[in-house]
Amino acid sequence: MARFVFITGGVVSSLGKGLASAALGALLQARGFSVRLRKLDPYLNVDPGTMSPFEHGEVFVTDDGAETDLDLGHYERFTGVAARKTDSVSSGRIYSNVLEKERRGDYLGKTIQVIPHVTNEIKDFISIGEDEVDFMLCEIGGTVGDIEGLPFFEAIRQFSQDKPRGQCIFMHLTLLPWIAASGELKTKPTQHSVKELRSIGIAPDVLVCRSDKPIPEKEREKIALFCNVRKEDVIAAPDLRSIYEAPLAYHREGLDQAVLDAFDISPAPRPNLQRWEDVQDRIFNAEGEVKVAIVGKYTQLEDAYKSIAEALTHGGMANRVRVKTEWIDAEIFERDDPAPYLEGYHAILVPGGFGERGTEGKIRAAEFARTRKIPYLGICLGMQMAVIEAARNLAHLPDAGSEEFDHEVGKKRFTPVVYHLKEWVQGNHTVARKVDDDKGGTMRLGAYTANLAPKSKVADVYGETVIEERHRHRYEVDIKYREKLEDKGLKFSGMSPDGRLPEIVEVPDHPWFIGVQFHPELKSKPFAPHPLFADFVRAAKEVSRLV
Ligand code: GLN
Picture 1 (spheres, helix red, strand yellow):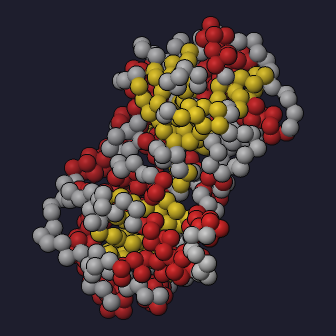
Picture 2 (spheres, helix red, strand yellow):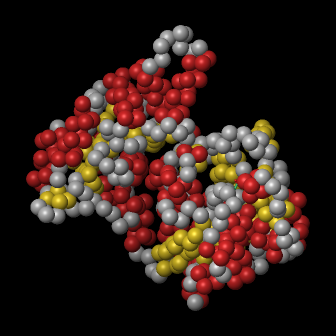
Picture 3 (cartoon, protein in one colour):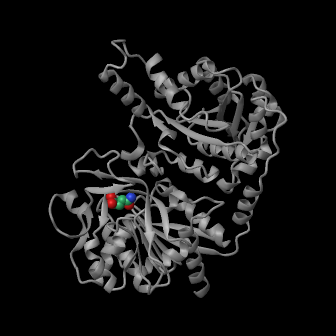
């Protein structure tokens, strides 16, 4: 049966709780344990699928088709364990399950209350698959004291009581602010945060304290004394140059040892940190730099394309170069010629997105990359834009466009080279959707197989001809235009197994021009860079040597 680590945060948000959880997962793996990480989010959205990337950052999609919080991306990148639907839940989902059961009469006429009905639903969620791993790490979103977080805190308190003694521990992240005037790190916010936690019945076993200065011995003793932990359980979390330093940095600070001590696991198995030493070496000993332009819509908030930024970093690591990414708002190219903006870059990436705004600019970016022979990677919408560009400029379909944009304004303006898919095959069953279905969870979501054309560029890049990648979209390139486009040099080099859905296009007569209907960035890891990103950065590196 799994041991449980509950990870909570206090004082302020954005302390890097997700990263600390992911790093702890990696360290427990390094000591030979199996782990699974889970995120419990107090917001009322049923899932983040309907939340704007401007507000909540990217939506991370799992193999089994769940739209989840971007922290699950960190978990996967650090542990390599593929997240599942059952690794992410929100208050919205919990309440909607409870209310569904109430309507069905499952509660046999009882009065439905937060305790026990909502808390039981949370506890049931936490224990799903508990027999499968040595450690289950559950992160609670938000900070202690938030009204909407209370049912989750109450549920984990009860959960730890339901389990035999010693099977659950609590790890709490706080902030030690530096007060320049007195030249001190202040422990009071941490003390208050722990007091708040203890007032709802949770006594932390390990404290992770974020600060931009090392914690002096005196302060460490003070925190231990006032927060009722041992001095060794006060872990310093200094700012890092790269997130991929986190496992080694936390190990040096004694995080994994403190956690194993809290569970009384002795002797603790020795860690093998080779993987993280190699990752760190590749990050800090890169030679040279390549510049990649990302032409997108959600450019103000980097978290909106979190996995793409990380996958590019991994691609850099594979080639031992630094990747400098710059975000360019696609709308600029609807007014201005892209050339002066894009000329200095070694590669261009057009990421996924929704809605018409900025798409004409993305089409121009794709045209620039194709005609100037600059490496181009189009992801999802970025692939659709590359196809529309080729249709308009090579295949003589000047009105080529996507049905998505016509639906938005409610009138027909484009030849639908990209159309709304209403029915498709997943495994051995057919999925059907209408245009006006609910917005949440109605896309082609999760892992699908694609067959790659032998001898194509992508088959060469992947080193295989059957791949599985994650999807999140409603629209598809229409196979009807295949012949016309292939005649003009845009090859359909990856197809769904039934041959109906184009999954990859490429321009053979170009150093590197690939569009993919799926999201390869979701599966890239620092210790296993995704082949498409590794090869895209390799191509960029070649361009950087030529200029
Ligand atoms: N908006 C497009 C679609 O739904 C692309 C989605 C995406 O880029 N993830 O098909």
